[in-house]
Image: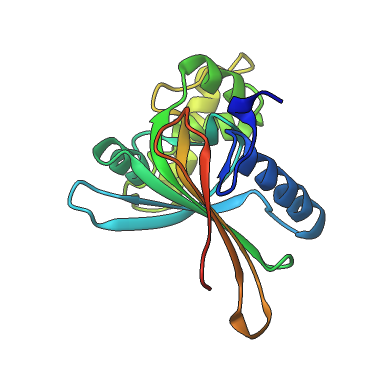
Length: 206
């Protein structure tokens, strides 16, 4: 191992927290009955008013954590106004949490196209039909739009709509939290100053 990648006290290489997340995520997939990939996504608008909802993690690696959505949804609009966000995983069975914060940007179109092509056809049609986060007068509004796009594309390929795609959160802060007796939890915090920097490590009081 060269000197640049040699872990030092309070400092670890670029991929260290991702390896730890992979280990915990694998444990969660084996232990949780449903949606181990579910995560709270917190965003804020230009005025700093926060909003949170559950989305699904679709990919992660040292480049960041990826989820997909309608770019014209409330979360999409907020990320356009304020490009920073936070994620939180809570795995109840494992008694573990992971908190992630950082800057968010759209994934490139080719990556969004590739993922969209793997979705069930009904979900692809839904991405066209749903004017996400906008009011509707009743369920029939949605069903009518689904029928319209079903007829439009027939039996052919459903292309990805321009208003739908992926976001990648590039973390500068990742905290691993484990339940402890008497609420003396274990907290390990990774922080970094830039995308290509190694990670600083701190143990936090519970």
